[in-house]
Amino acid sequence: MTATPATGRPAVPPLERSGLDRRCALVDRFFRALCVAASVVCIVPLAAIVLFVVLNGIAALNLDLLTKPPRALGTGGGALSAILGTLQMVALATLIAVPIGLFAGLYVNEFAERRSARAIRFAADVLVGVPSILVGIFVFTFLVLPFRQFNAFAGSVALGVLMIPVIMRTTEEILRLVPGSLREAALALGVPTWRTVISVVIRTAIPGILTGVMLAVARAAGETAPLLFTALGSRLVNAGDFSRPMDALPIFIYVNARQPFPALNQQAWGAAFLLLMFVLTINVLVRARTLGQRAG
Amino acid sequence: MTVETRPPAEAPRADAPPDDAVAGYAARAAAEPAPRVPVRIEPAGGTRSDQYDDAVGRIEIRDLAAYYGTFRAVKDVSMEIRPHAVTAIIGPSGSGKSTLLRALNRMHELTPGARIEGSVLLDDRDLYAPEIDPVQLRRVVGMVFQRANPFPTMSIYDNVVAGLRLTGRHSRAFLDETVERCLRAAALWDEVRDKLKQSGTSLSGGQQQRLCIARALAVDPEVLLMDEPASALDPVATLRIEELIHELRQSYTIVIVTHNMQQAARVSDRTAFISMDDDRAGYLVELGDTTTIFTNPDNRLTEDYVSGRFG
Image 1: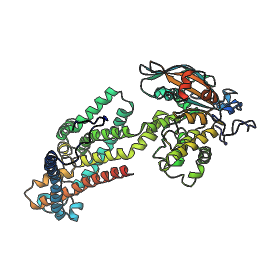
Image 2 (image 1 turned 60 degrees about the vertical axis):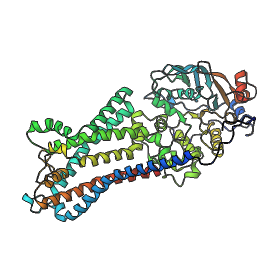
Image 3 (image 1 turned 120 degrees about the horizontal axis):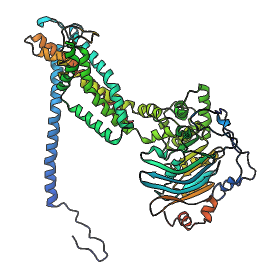
Image 4 (image 1 turned 90 degrees about the horizontal axis):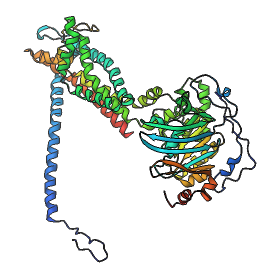
């Protein structure tokens, strides 16, 4: 093989399959099968959860669940308190978290020194990883204890705290993807920096920022632990009174699934189905959007 | 602000040589441009006409050095850029051509750590004087970039008037008029007149670049800086851009950085050759009429470069 003709060109290597190649092929097949198996195991929990919740949830679904408040001791009623509560608290949490996350992401990307940017980014990443029950306790200390009253506002703040880092990080990542050439184009037209940031940079990034907000909403909607210390949950329909306790779908599921009454267990399944649909719909919408963007 | 269509700065000249003259349009630079109304680049106050009488977009660079942090990218550049002529800046990669160009509208300083020494005078005013507002300045000294960069969220129409919309309020009629005038000036009107509402990024590369030129014209600059405006385009689109540059020189002072020496020879009246010193800082080797630079340069380095022996 190392024989080199006098012309200085290397000899042509053999083209036939060797024994080594056949062994390689075998090992290759084995590991490929292993990878496929692992991938299947990854998908199984999701598939199982969706299947389980859908099968049980659809059976439990009825008009009462959507339109009636809970009634005492497992005799009928519905999840209206929880549905309204989740919608209200997630909405208020979004109102709180979007401006903070957006401006923080903007600051990190546009204005911060490299070192402070890294520090803020690190803090946000840590905040994402903080167990949500700790966020609940934290908010409990500041917004529940002083008032001696569980309240929906505290619940919204707790959810907002969980949403902020998600929104901030996606905003920042998306802003970084906006080509510098667009910024330069605007500045070269004599557009002031602040106007460039608002009308060119943010405007270009809006679809991506919305994606981050939607993912944060999906996350907040499913959180249970931070609400246990704050909004507490309630059997009453609370429309708009954020100084009082409020129900939410995850709490409703938690409470009713532990009851000895089959009717209430059924309601928990129904609520689980609603929550899953809400979160899945958002996720699927987001994926469809981002895929569409990549294609376009 | 003047609203009417910008008139050619010069009366038609009977002594203009034919278009196919060797070394482009250099000979025409000899003609005197007519005086234009001067422009305001102070932050506030005054109108275009109350500043001077004879300003026409003449740039003078004095002892310019440009730094990125501690690295000196350009040094000792002193040169005059004649009004209403095309000045090409040629030179090897990394010699600081773009840096020099970006010093002329203070885009250089947007890079963190970047700074300038020396001065740049536009119609005898120091652009680096403390009272000069770089934002206002960039409306007077416009820029076209190497890669066409229309705003992807905006229609063709909105792209053209982006500079106006983002800096003030204007009547619909004025915007309509500006869009048509600038697209015509950029030789794009006939191709896009029926689809002004479509996205600017739906156009071809060459069309996008002409859209960017129209956008730069819409804020009514005196000077147009072009940083390799055709290097990302195919030969046909390049030719159109070059024709356009030839048209625009009647109304604007144009400085074009190009890698392509044939292009410099075709489009420019004057050519500056920038080279790198041992310390990797770019310096001006020679500036002269394009014909001279390409046929009979004074400097040996220039001769080597334009004849393809180095760089």
